[in-house]
Length: 249
Image (cartoon, rainbow, N blue to C red; front, side, top):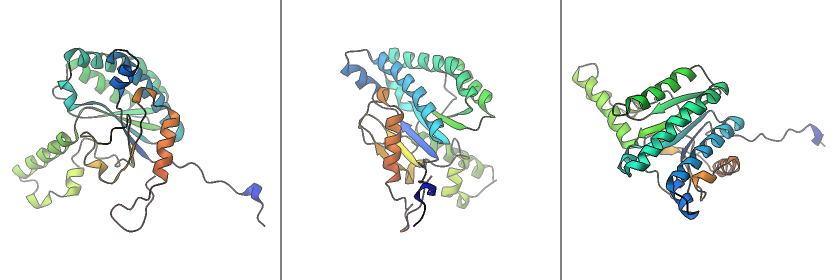
């Protein structure tokens, strides 16, 4: 009989790339009779917890849907508060992220952003460019359809200038012209609040991602909720359209 004391238990494996739709700030606040702005503020605290937990668990890439291209249609006061929270998060948390080896990447359209917001995002990327413990991808002013349209426009310009022909526009070519073409597609997409839709988030990249929907409102999301979502992911068989299950971590 084998010496059971020398048998190593399998380690808790994690997906390499986790993406999160952070939903439910407003409903969290409403359930407590608080203003929506308090829900957003508490949502920033959940971001801090989740980034730390992702690093501790060994996740290599964490993508968060922080502000969608459609969110500009919200009331001006709420948009202003969200921009203020972003400014405070970068100014207050960037040093800690850098110290902990987190590299910040930003996806989304930047051309129409306020100059100070664009500068903050660029500074965060520049300061942390050499870090490699965790890549934190911030989807800001982002929409999945808009991202694919930008990729198509880039390819169309190449056709127009003669550097490629129409037949060169393949799925791989489109992938190579997305906002972060060097990053692997997400293994796991989590959405909080119980809603079960992607809401224009990583539509191209999430084609074969495992989707886990959790009832927790985003301000209450913590390490335990992240671990539970990963446990659900590990129970899935990833076949990528084939017949044989593949590991995605």
